[in-house]
Image (cartoon, rainbow, N blue to C red; front, side, top):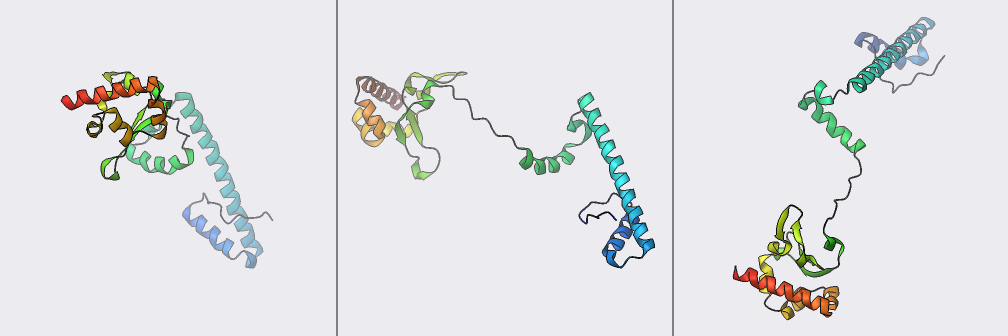
Length: 194
């Protein structure tokens, strides 16, 4: 006799499924007639399972052939629970955001922690003062400098002592760095006046 799997989901009518479970529970004590009945129920289940698989494959072929979308077959309410369950199993690796500014990979020269320790820190990268905000935003990047920067922007020495990173101090000691720091002070002064 073939091995019967207990964890198999039966595709039988409820009465036959119940009878199958009863017979299976008493498997060791079954008479020859009951063993034949159990075998017949199992054969019906296997046949039904094969037919079902065949029908599923036909439906899949039709979906692919006519490029049918799930939203055409089911309502949003029907799709929502199934989508949530499958999302964890089929989630793709997200692609990293594309960085478009040259300075995005540049070293951090100035850093200001948010007040109260909440929110994002202000980070200034080398060369950013000379770039625009984004391709579709013509205003320069410094138009978005935090107002708190004005309290330290009175002079280059104030910015260096309060905001500069170690790398920033080294860079601002060079002629190129000094020119950039002077531009930052100039911009902060303009922001204070406006």
